[in-house]
Length: 228
Image 1 (cartoon, rainbow, N blue to C red):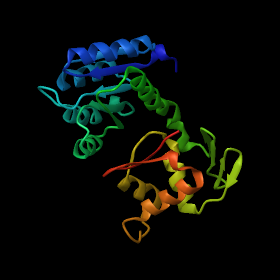
Image 2: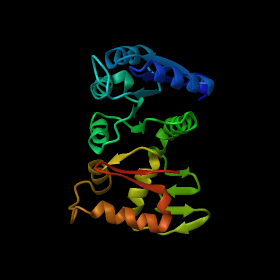
Image 3: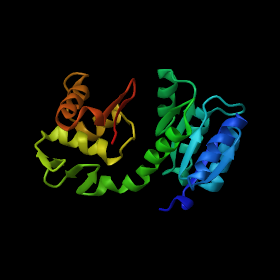
Image 4: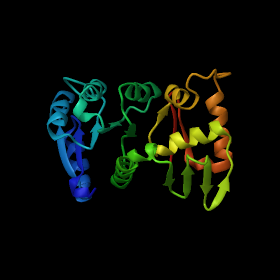
């Protein structure tokens, strides 16, 4: 998909933020639409069907959390990526955002170049959506072969126990997406009895040792994500 075909909706009640962020995103080649509050943002999202929505949290009339929840209830926006752009860096705010259905969050203030980098990372998921159905796929220098339970990292084959492999395959299926702990347990362990609440943490630690510490990020109180 070409940049000129990608639609981004920016929802914020601060005119300066709308102007600066819009300018930088448009300069990068994206189609940008704006809204001044959550209510207007939901209406515009339903009309424009953007690929990505960037939402402020604290807004009049309808805040970002409620707006996100409304968008997630809209079938036509099922595949739309949603991220929060907020100065509220507290854990509870981030958790509330993920509970509402957000894919990620960006903390203000943020430099334009960093913002563009974050947006590009989010939009890569549009290309990676099909990875979940593929038996063999590549993420960075890592090749995942689901059929043979094989992992190749920088040309070197790595043998992983089944659960470590399945956890890696899940996280790499959508790089930068934060997978909640309960989702990981459901996808990787299913109905199996999990002994101890730190099972995921132990498996993540082992993957960090074998694949690379820098690829696995903990989102406190929420879960984990794979980063390139």
